[in-house]
Image 1 (cartoon, rainbow, N blue to C red):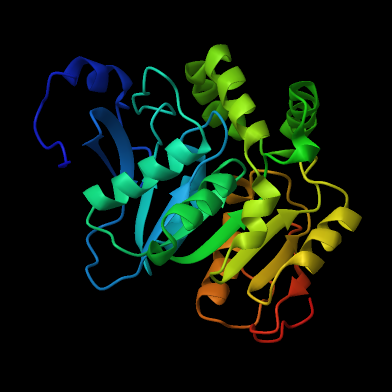
Image 2: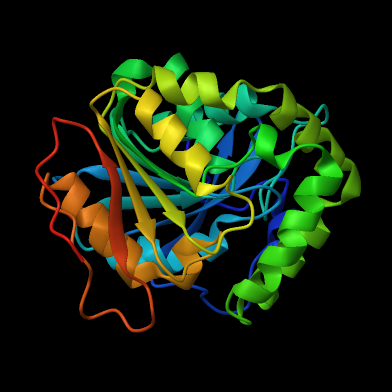
Length: 302
């Protein structure tokens, strides 16, 4: 496994998918993982900075995670890959399930020389993180789960589609130009296969097994999340290391719609500081503590 720095046999694949102009302040790069070409974005070299990798959701690439990732890139060695089979990265011929994606994430970190990491996931990225924690517990520093998806509340497929349909108008209109190309590239066969994999994955069980400091962030306008009563019920089942925070006004793609608010919360979580609202972030978002484990500092009311 080594970073691809020259033009390999897959150059036509790369030139076809590579954007004509930079999409981000983070550098867009390619590497090869287990024989697959993988596209990723990376912050400038910061050898002493702690590593933080952002993990995208169902059918999407890492592109919609960039608004939050960029805001954190001055403090963390930031990585935003397109997992194999998503975005510009090549996919395995047999497809991937949640454990495969977690394994691919670990292999990508190997390739980048990262031993320990904080993972920030959105939607499907959250089950990938919990599986990564099960497979590689010594490599996960902290977990940030934003709008976790893939549980019983998102089944069957027609319910998930209806939830996504309701979510669309609640997201910024510019999200359309980011998400639609990714969904079209992912395709219907991959959607059906990946959805079946998610329905078979024990999301709640893995969430409750997490043993690292964990931040869960949800939006109060997210139709893919269960009712507040169920969220509180799940929170009460967790150990003392889980901090559950709500952002008022946010829907499902918080990493894209409320990057300032989310980055602010993540910074405070990483520093073990009280969670407060970000006065510099425009909009209606407000951070409200829902559940905090005993090991975390007391949150300030907002």
